[in-house]
Structures are given as C-alpha cells and as structure tokens.
Length: 478
Image 1: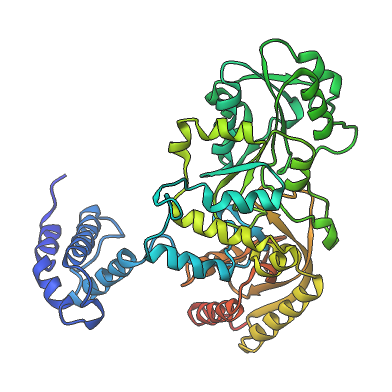
Image 2: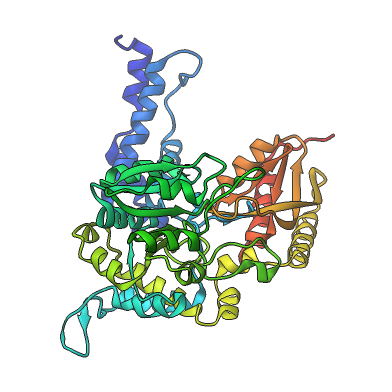
C-alpha cells in the first residue's frame, strides 16, 4: 500500500545518514568505532523508523523524531555491535558444570601458560630433541599415562568424537555388544546408537533396560563381534530392581573370546569423590586397572579442563586409533592442548588439584562455606536499604551439572530475593540483561542466588545489579 501524504511528510523529515554521521562525529565515545559500523547502525535505525511510520495505527509516530532521538538509538545499536557476542556472565544458578555457561572454569595457573602459548610460537608439532616434525599428542600423552596408569593416550576435540573415532577404528562393519540400559543420550540429542551408526559399527543390544547379566553378553558373541562396549550412565541412574555387569567381568569375557573391551566414562574423573563425603563415581584409574583396552572421557566436565575427548588404554589399541585418518578432523588446537596439559599436571597431586581446579573446588565445597557466602551476600543486599527488597536464606541443593552425578545434591545455603511490584520472571530477566549478565534460577516462584558457583568479587556484581534494577523499577508505595 502506498504511503499517504502524512506518512510521506514524516519520511521526508527523517535525517539522512550523512547528517547522523556528522552528529556522531562530535561524540568522543564513538571516535574509535569503524565507520562501516556507524553507517550500518544508522541505516538500521532509519529503517526501523520508516517501518514504524509506514505501519500506521496506534504505534505510528505523530511526528518525525528529533535528530537527538535518532542518534541516541544509533548509539544503542553501536554499543551492541561493538560488544563481544561471547562474554562473561555471573553464574548464580548453583549448577557447577553448566553446559550453557561454558562448563568448567580453568585454574589460574593454567591461564598463565595458556596466555604464553597463545601469544608465542610453540613446539606444537616439532620435536625439539630430534629437530624435526613431531606429534601434538606428546604434549599430554606422558602425563595422561602417568595419572591414569594407561600404556598410551591421545586426545581429540570432545568425548563424542572420541567414541566415534574408537568405534570406527575398532569395529567398523562388525558387531559391538552393549547393554540396552547403557544406550544413553547426551546433551543436544546425541545418542550412542546414532554415534554407533555413524561409526559403521553394528549395534548389538543385550539385556533389558534395568537388568543385564554376563550371560547376555556371552550369548551375543559370535564371529562377527568386534568389541564389547560399556557406557557409564553419567547423566542418569537406574535404581530399584536392577543389575549390570562390572567392567572387570566384561574384561574377563573379552579375554576369553579374544575381544577388546571399551568403556565410555562420559564425564570421567581422576578424583574419588567419596573421599569428600560425596557419592562414589568410577575413576579413570579404576577403569584402566580393570583392564579395559580403551577408555574415553571428557576433559571439560568433572575433569575441570577445556573441551576435549581423552582416550587412554592399551598401546596396541591406541596406536590403531591414532592411525585413523578421522583423527585429523577431530584433532584439538594448541590452546586446548595448553589448557589441558596445565590441568592434567595439577592431578599429579590430587589435593592440589581439588584446591586449584574451580570445578573440583565448587563440587567439594563444604556447606559451612556456602553458609558464610550466603549470609554475606544477603547482608550486602539488605544494606541497599530498599523496603521493596525481600531477602531470605534457604537451604537448597546445588548440582554438579554437565550430565554428571545425576543423583548428587550438593547441600547449599542460598539467598532468595523478591522485589515488591515486580514478578520473579521480570527480576530474573532484568538480571540476565545486565552487564555482566547475572544468571539465577527460579524455584517455587522465588529467585534463587546460589553462592556455590560465584567467583571472587561476583557477590558485589550482584549487589550492583540489584541497585541498578531498583533505581529503574517503579516505586510501589505499598
């Protein structure tokens, strides 16, 4: 529909891009912004105003906007355009390995070496002793073998890639026997059967969802069998009337039939959490000691390092996997290697690892520490002196997250906050829109701030975020 006379008049009165750029040129805050960004933001702003004018109805402007109004909108768009898309957030959710918030945090000592490797050349694939091309796996293979007790090791980009690579190498075109109760689905709807199909392995399910016996595996072994696979149920648990075959039993069966055994540990850990009063989780060392030919696990979950898929086990199997051309497509870069090596070195002393690696710190954090942090945060919020602010303390559970330790509730003292006149969803959204964004959780129509996952100085960020929110919120006299 063609614009009417009133709309045409409003469109003519909109300033041109050149006039907007001239106004922006007098603003010091955007002096270093590339001209292309300024032009794009100016055009987007003008396009938005044209749409409002042409839309008509109650939302249409009665008069053309002032230049100052247009410039203010352009500045908002410029700020968004110049901000990084990937940015820091404050995790007040109480989920330690939060898949959506970057999973594990790197230890401070790891960051020092990472910065040096990132800003300098390195011996990524250069053998300094021999003076010729080397293998990038050597950066972490020795320390991985030292910690796990394995004969050999290698690393790829994530654990799904590790599982795919191992299955494709050891079982392409042949049967892989796995318990029906271990056909897990991980985040993003990636399923073991799907990974198996992509690898070329032929899935052979045995047992039932809740009970699988050694005789089920034994009865499925035939001339087409290439591998016995055990998958750790790291993101769910079967309780009640259930039974599963231990890794040691599976290894004994594999030895009897000359078949390799592989275990996908999923999250994987080098630390026995039962030493800290938490639920027992199988460690990588235990799987290696049980005799598994291949063990795969993640680097960025319970391990507390960067995203990676770690593969350890018997030398013969690992060497076959290394020779697979797919390794080229799944290899990790120098920054991941640097971060992973630094993290692994901390595990040479388990006590030092727990003290230095943020993921382990938070998972093993005593309740008394969360108590102290919660009280300090509640007192700081109360000090804002706003009667609209409702603050209380409540004992709730944190979670390990990352698809790990599904039954583990980490006892925490949390801060619940409400603002009179604002719904809890509006408060949550406002915190999420801040700089930096604060990510809380909602339970029983209450906003929950869990101090377990707060890092140094972030309590003050939360207090500032509430102070800003209260200034902008309508003042309810009730």
